[in-house]
Image (tube, rainbow, N blue to C red; front, side):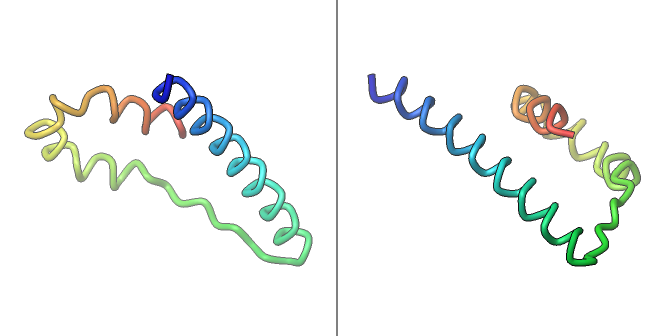
Length: 69
């Protein structure tokens, strides 16, 4: 039961966080702040050997991280 409700709380917190980030991003843009998106591919490519060597045990976690993009 603790695991179930912990997971539910985690998912709710993530939703609240995403909503908060979106709201503050809009406010900052409206105030004239410029957001610069960076190309993460060079960093991803540069770390490929590390993922190849150590990543097998973290496959699920790396997939979750990549799915966020």
